[in-house]
Length: 314
Image (tube, rainbow, N blue to C red; front, side, top):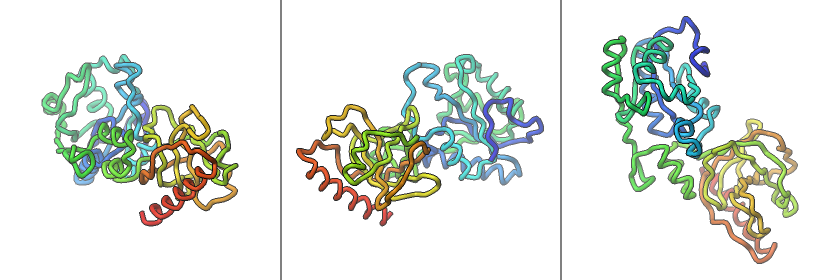
């Protein structure tokens, strides 16, 4: 899959395309539906399928300080999109100047001149251009003048998560924030992931016999609620069952909120400086302050046992 940042990276001889546009944060099951439709139409027409997305999130530019928690950083997002069979991802730098472009200018510069769109596939609530003035009706009208079709995909995918609320990035963030990893996993179609570099912490886990990878997460990451989770730690391409702690280590009167993962039954791991991924499978318990180190160790041993059982059965 080709990856372009900005219109200038698109090859000058790029042929006609089937295009879909959106933030696609998390690439959840609703996103998978619309991207899958774009890939299917592209294959039917013998064309390339292109996903257009933005960096940073438009909200951060329009209302600084309002950046939503990220379900997937852009490199991870591109990986997930590539798995759906897309031929190219175009990341458009979202600037103040870009945000002021009219819907007509956006369509002309991006869809017509750069990507030579043959079909554009969107959800019914798609908006674009300055102050989100453009909608599907306008896009269809512009397509009639510029030789591209617009197809609208119903994104109302839902399940048990959120009491049947349609799947969305907003719903996923709420589920992650509440620690409902089963619900978040249902919306995403996979466990929620947090990524970052392993840094040195207080090293209490090593002293207690449960050495953990202290993960300095990517900025704006959607971090689950404080607590202990079962999941996996992936480093250097190896996926290892893990017990994961999110919180401030209240037994030791900690103040900094951390994400720490203990790779179950692994010894001698040296992960410092590596970029790793932590996948959250299930919530085990809330964060607690224990009266003694012995009580903490007993609970940690139980956490590891339950995490091992859950990951073995997943």
